Image (cartoon, rainbow, N blue to C red; front, side, top):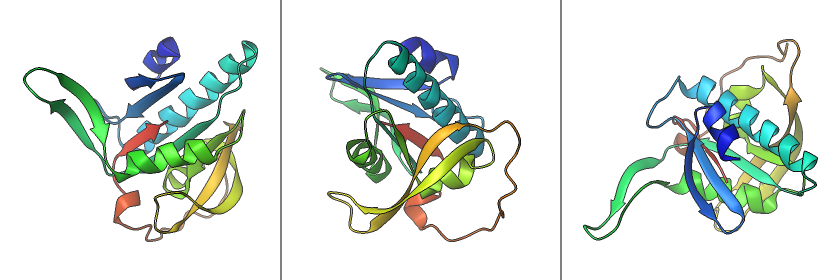
Length: 166
């Protein structure tokens, strides 16, 4: 998974047991939309690799405002990412199904032209005070989507630059 992360210029934040947390958008960003697409493409390739190895994985991806930097003390410092968008990505991962990639609406809005997705519907996630519209990320599109490109207010926590995969 590390090699796939590097291929898509992701930042491997940490290993958590048998899980991995990766984000795009810091320290280098190609822009919010391109970072989101790279993150979902990376997840699709990770899913395919896990399938080839006979390993069942589930993933959650969210786009939102985060704080990234060195956190800790003089004795122990760690470069990491924190914030409610990170928590939402972790909750999406927990709510996902084996062999699936569950993404938030904020991520869907950025990737829908390049990634074929299917609506899962609104879900209530532990620790999140509102229902979250979710989608399954399925595969890369061969041709651009012809879906309407309307702009809607998604709320402040879902319009910021970083993408998180848990």
